[in-house]
Image (cartoon, rainbow, N blue to C red):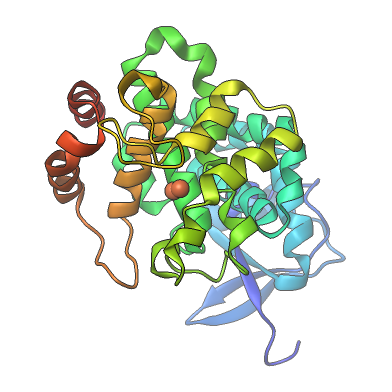
Length: 313
Ligand SMILES: [Fe+2]
Ligand SMILES: [Fe+2]
């Protein structure tokens, strides 16, 4: 093992005994990675129990093995989540891992979006998790903590929008999965405008604000051509920066001209941007974020929707 080997963390929850890919697994002790299992050996139930007993919840793989492991996680997500049983933090870790991998693919190669079912499947798992978990505020904060801004932000907006939608419109549950899809993909246009969107720590500090403002329309045009997305998704991508009292973009729409689903994505977008640490701005607490959005509400959002949003979280 070379001294400069790079390792990637994986949740123990994703390491399904017997069927997990044959890659070397490492643990971490005092900042050093120690070989736990050679790649020629299978990972067994006994290994899993031993690690759980020693309260080891994170393992490491060599970065060269990470893609294979991530694909395995995504393909076996149903079974992995079932294995986690009541352990909500393990479930959250497995979901974060699968969604991070998906979004990394999307932002580096937007054509990944052609696979609509892949995105809907992930969104369905996230929706299921939201309905089970109690501590959603915690989930939002920790989702993709170590990921690039674009990934973390897209995941947060997806989860937040689904949470709000399920509480405000329980009768419109059929749209829930597509709300999550819209949240994950709302800023896909950024990857078509910024040179390396995953290196960006905050879209809005990038020079050329006018360029950046093209992202909703560019994203919409791209998704229309690539994949068969529902109108709800396309509309949210195109109009999530419209403002209820006008002055938004790209259409300058007003009031009920903006679909309710798009308004929810827009509100979640602003909230999630505020609670995230950025180079130019410290992260706001949820209370501060609500105060700031509340002050802006007479310009940006329907008052009724804002209060309902606040009550839903
Ligand atoms: Fe946006
Ligand atoms: Fe956004």
